[in-house]
Every structure is written in C-alpha cells, then in structure tokens.
Length: 431
Ligand code: ZN
Image (tube, rainbow, N blue to C red; front, side):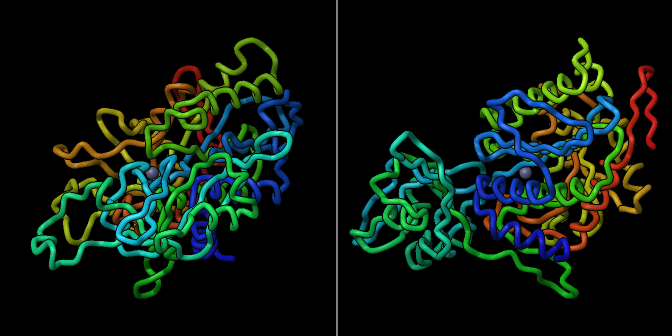
C-alpha cells in the first residue's frame, strides 16, 4: 500500500487516541516488536526491538543497538485530536429526541462539527466476574448529528455566531426512548448492565479522501496529529538500525496540555529512557550522559498559508502545502527549535533530498504550542519542532498536502539513520 493510502486508512481506523495506539501497537508487533509491561522488570537484549503502551492511549517503541548504550534519537508526536466527549451522565431527551450531553475535549472549531454524520468511539470499562477490564469500542455506523439552527431564526448567522458548547453542540441520536448505551454495548459485544464506565467521544464519520488536480491534497479528520504519528511510524520501521537507541513516541492529551499520567508532561518518556539505560549499562550516570548526547524531533502539524487570508502570516516565514517538512521556531520557545537543532535537522533533510521550510508566526500573533517543550522539561536534550503544513487546523475535516506524506517519511527515516554525535565541546557531527 502506498504511504498516502496507508495514512488515510490509518486515520479511518483511528477514531480516538485509543484506536490509534491499538493500530500502532498491532503494526509494531507485526514487525517483530515485543510488547513490554511497565509492571515488570525489563530484560533487554542487544539488537532487541520493544514497545510499551500506557493507558492504551500513548505508545513508545525502541530499538536497542548491538553495541551498548550511546545516545537516544527520538521522534515524538500525539495521538489525540479535539473532539466532543460524552459526560458521565450523557443521556437526555428534548423535543421528542434522544440527545447526548457532551463537552469539549481540546480547542476545536466547533461549527465544523455541525450537520455531519457522527458516531461514538472510545474505551469501555466492563465488569467481569473477577474484576474490571477495558475494551475498545467503535460504533462503526452513522449514529448522531449536531443540528444547526435554520437561517430563518438567525438572519445574521452569516455574520458570525458565538457558539455555546452547552447549548449548540448537543447531538441528536434517536427518538425519545432510544438508549445510546444499548447501541454502544452491542458494538462492544457486552451486555449494557456490565458497562461500569468509559471514555467515549464523538467522532466525524467522514472518511479521509484525496482531492484536487493530480490529487494534490488530503482531506481528513484528525490529520493533526495522526499524520505525524503515522509518517514517523513508517520512518521508524523503515530505518536501518544504527549505533544509537532509536525511539518512537506517540503521547495522548497534547490537546489538553499533556498533563496526564500518559501525556508528554508525565514520567512515561524519562522512565522508559532510564530503564533502557539501566538494562544496557548499569553504571552510574549512564542515563545522564546518554541524554546529554541525544536529539529529539517533536513532530506536530504546522499551519499552511491560507489562500483566503494571506495577511495572517509572517511575510518571510510562512509555509505551504506540499512544500516539504516545516521547521517551527518561536522566540519565546513555545517551540523548542533553536539555531543548533534547526541546522542539524535541516542538514539531515538536505542530505536525504527532502525540502524543508521555516515557519514563525507574525509578531502580533501568539500562535500555538506543542509537546516538544513539555517533554523537554523531563528529558532535556537538543530538540527541534517540526510538522507538515496544513489548513483548517482543529476543524472536524482538515486539509494537507498529499506529497508531504512522502517528504516526512523520508526526512524522519534519514533522521533515525543519521548518527548525531553531540561532543562535550558542543561540536555536533552528523554521520
Ligand atoms: Zn497537534
């Protein structure tokens, strides 16, 4: 399957972070990666390939080199996207309809969720005889719609609407008496009375599609950041083993600040690196010395210059779809990129024949941030923030350049295969 089709198929199969991580884990296991449990003590073999998940919604995979511990080369992205989450008591009725009570997860463009076929997916907690188990569920059929108000009741609707999540964003999923839990439990293959809890989200049923002359673009839900999660997985699996530890990370909860047990602001990454260092080299300070020589790529999608709003972007530091991998910079370090990390990464891309472009916001636009600087607070190393240029970030349907899929896979394959040698005097050699 070509990479663009592979990406679109992955997005269609990943309505939530739980499903994205399950699909990634299945691919890693099929490629020979042994799944480790954080509950156990790890025995790692030279040349071994391993992965682990936390909460079922974050995943780390790594390859141990034959020659012992040297340093880490890490690519990190995120598994979650803005969506509406079902509240603990979600069932309501109104005007003869069955309605769900939902709240915002992350900062989406709310209006883009209106009048589209939606459904429910996520994780159920199921009561078994001997305890509680979690189980993924995806109601793989159109189930709900968040209906707009007709123009006749709001003649100024086209001049802008202030959307209220509590009032305007509650989806209709049946006539009064319909039971959403019955449907969800059926799709999960369990009796409704055994459902003890869950984390359920609405998701957009629209499928990823390619459009435009010569198939220039991809339109899909959740491109931010499943495009980076997928392309970095392809690169990680394609890269030839080297003398350092290659690490692939996908963290949950970037869209809500990363501050969960499985987010980038948790112990997940540093504890994994510590365990790798201990298993390969039990000497004191082995971990610290390895991290000091390490390099991280924080991969999260970037903004493409909008054809209808060119004035919103910096004149010299704007980026374009299909223009190659974006290196993001911000003077206040919302992005981790600095002169050194940008130069290292751009040089690796140039060596692989991959175009790059530089992004910075207008000086009067605060812009967004991502997980690179958050992960860096726990495992501090040279880091660069990159992404692929896309339109309509945080819309229910986003648009990106089809040719950039290949650009990112080639760039990150070259990154994993490069030997980045950070010397004590600050000199960096790239082999
Ligand atoms: Zn993102």
